[in-house]
Amino acid sequence: ARRRGIYSNVLGFFGGITWALLVARVCQLYPYFAPSQLVNRFFRVYDQWNWSKPVMLCDIEDKVNVPGMNGFKVWNPKANPADRQHVMPVITPAFPAMNSTHNVTETTKRILVDEFRRGYEAVKHVEADRADWARVHEPFPFFRHFRHFLWLEVLAQTEEVYQKFSGWVESKLRILTRQLEATSGMIIHPNPQQYDLRGTDREWPLGCGMFIAMAFFKDHGAFVGQTFDLRVHFHHFVDVINQWAEKDAYNGMFMLRLKRIRGAQLPDYARDAEDVEVDKKRNRSQRHDGLTGANAIGGEQVKKRHISTGGLP
Image (cartoon, rainbow, N blue to C red; front, side):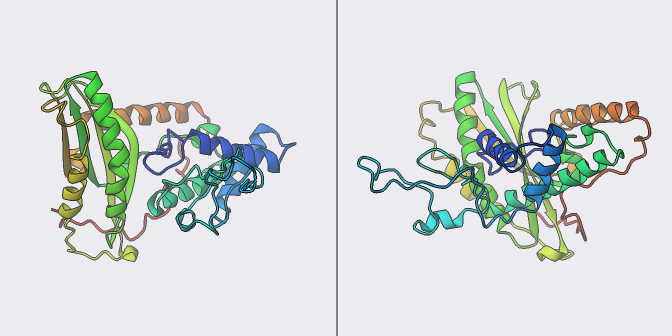
């Protein structure tokens, strides 16, 4: 999940608890299957899953009539309107039952569903002896897959300030993605990885880069020459960041940069990190007889009728 860029509860993907629950459910459904068979069933089950129904390991217990237990909120979409808004519910088994995926948005759901589909296709290729297992978990080529990005840099003077401020920004990044995903004609793809600046900024000894990819498609409402004004979203996000409770205590010791860039403007520290993973993949492919010329299995399934838009501010 980390290699495919879909491991982050904060950004609206699945966290470790959710992934463990998904695996446990597949093991419940197929208790006598070998590990390789379970991998196949894992991707097949969740590729075909009806996400209007929750993934559960057991029935939900509501102990409202048990003395001392009526103060606990249990996940119940029939009684709680907020629970009905959850788009990929995965319910924890212990009381009180909670949804471990309440941060998932329509954007991250689309990405996750596409990854389940891609994983299932990859496993079928492995079982047909047309690929090796490395194909299943090969890194997602984020910077090669997209051409437009939002580039955020979180900068700090000390380790303490960096840990606190970067955590604050990451926890609020979902606000920006929710606003961006509502923009007609544009789809986004948040990248949960934080890229170390590797000393590229002498004024700021500590920092990381974060990226949100943008793409534009006719079937999502985009058209040639369309202009996307994202400044309102940027300003609102900056206002949210400025509400950090410790900003006065650490005045002058942190900074957030936010910029829209094209692929050619990507910083070396981000591009180099992906190149290393691509080189590893190439070396593995060359060691596997007969796979050098194999066709890559597609990543995100929305890559059709792409429009190159230069009208972004």
